[in-house]
Image (cartoon, rainbow, N blue to C red; front, top):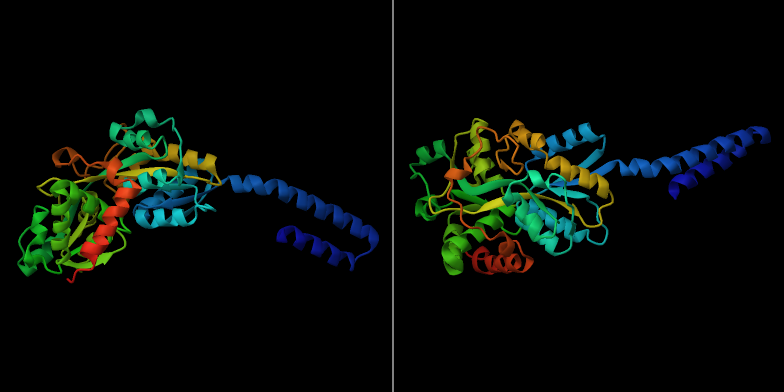
Amino acid sequence: MPFFKAIWDSVFLIKSLYRRDEMKTILRMALASVLLTAIALPAFAAERLKLYCSTDIAWCELMTKEFEKRTGIKVGMTRASSGETLAKIRAEKSNPKGDVWWGGTGDPHLQAAEEGLSQAYNSPKLSELHDWAKAPHKATGGKTVGIYLGALGFGYNSELLAKKGLPVPKCWNDLLHTAYKDEVMMAYPSTSGTAYTTLATMVQLFGEEGGFNYMKALHRNISQYTKSGSAGIKAAARGEITIGIVFVHGAVKQAVSGFPIQAVSPCEGTGYEIGSVSIIKGARNVENAQKFVDFALTADVQSRSGEVKSYQVPSNKNAISPPEAPDVSSIKLINYNHALYGSKAERNRLLKKWDTDVKVLPR
């Protein structure tokens, strides 16, 4: 190893400069240093964790700092959308770099489990979770578990809407109005869990033909596709676009932050995500990854989401939702088939069809 070679090179350099007796002492000290380092390195490596995070950066940072504080384990965190993270884990399959993947829409987590990219773990916290959070764990043989629920919808900038004299949208079909030409922003379904959930929701709401006809009509009103699902509502908050398709809690976050954003739960009904956490197959720090899963499922940890204005519904039944969080009981949720639309075959089929039938159309 280069590390040990450097030490021995230094020792022999010193040998040329000092007398024999002095050299014996130096050699003993160098050998002791080498042995201590060799012993310490594995222990040092064991107290580390590589986290892939797919929620908002502020929540990623809160989780990282709090986990380090509670465990003393140092965390290296990388933030990317759920679609981008799935692609990264695939690319690293033969030599995994990450240990645990936390957050982001559950469908990519289900796909990772199906492809053998994650590994099973039965946390002692499972008994504290809502049934909907335990469903992905059961479906995948323990390879992923729910941490929060978020209903799909959209948000609009009320000041821009009034300034432009646009009608107030209340339903999915309202977004197809010609008045909203270049006024809507969403992400690419291939890179964003939010956008893929939108595509799968339309197929389930209107049937496959009707769902793709909807996406084609919506395409004419899209000003820009982004990589991240939250980018559209952030642009709306900045006044760069009027409407952003997003999970409802994302629109609420912008409103709570003081921006003129109105959150909408569409009248026809809507799909939802089960944000999840998964341990990556071949993780170098498995025990630390398991500790992080336990930590992420803990009630008091989930109750802190409001500190960073994340308003999803927590999966632990004892966690306290922020008062600003959407009331899911008042939202018309469809019977979203997570097992089917989270599968690799169905996801790839729908994404390919979107690329060939929708993406290529002029706007």
